[in-house]
Length: 149
Image (cartoon, rainbow, N blue to C red; front, side):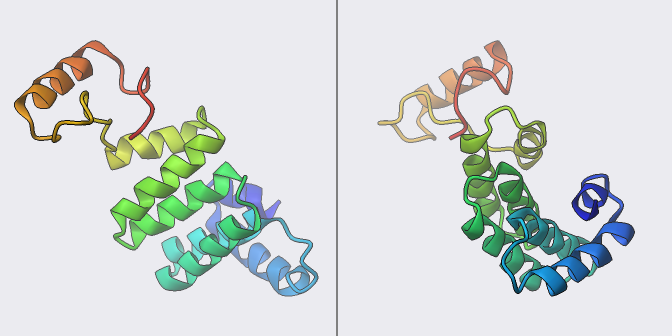
C-alpha cells in the first residue's frame, strides 16, 4: 500500500509508511527493492535529500536489476540531481527490461534523448547525418522504429 500511494503521488501518505517498513523489515532483507526505490525518489523529491535518495535508488537497482520501475525512480532522482547523462542511461536500462513502459517512455521524451546517427561511422555533426536525421524525424514517430541511442 505504501508503494501504491507513492505511485499515485500521495507522498505524504506513502513516504512515512515506506520509512517505517524499511526500518522494521529492512533488517530481515524481505522487502522488495521497489520500496527502497520509491523511498529514495520520494525523499529526493519531497525532502530535497538528493544524495540519500540516490543511494537508496542505486541500492534498489543492485538488489533487483530486473525491475524496470526501479530504473525509472533512479532516472527521476538522477534528473533531480542534475545528472542528465546518467538519467538517460537509467532510462535506457529500464527500457531494455520493459520497452513499452509508459512512464519510462514519457521520461525519455521529457529528457529528450537523441537517436543514433543515421550513419554511425560519420560524426553526428556531419551534414549528411544531420540532413538524414532531420528527414527521419519528420517521417517517423518519436517512439517508432529506432531503439533509443
